[in-house]
Length: 69
Image (cartoon, rainbow, N blue to C red; front, side, top):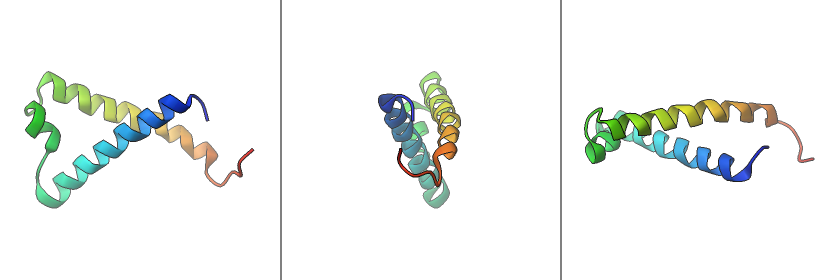
C-alpha cells in the first residue's frame, strides 16, 4: 500500500463516517449535524472528507486476497 499515514487517516475517517451512518440508521441521530449544525460549512467539509476517503479506500480492493509480499 502507499503512504501508511494516509491509509490510516483515511481508514479512521471512513470508520467515523460509518459510525455516523449507523447512528442515523438505528437511532435517526446524525452526530455530525448535532455537533456542527445541519449542513453547515463544517458539516459539509466533514461529509466531503468521508466521501473522498471512501473513494480513496476503493483502491484497497487491489490487495484483497493477496498474500503479504
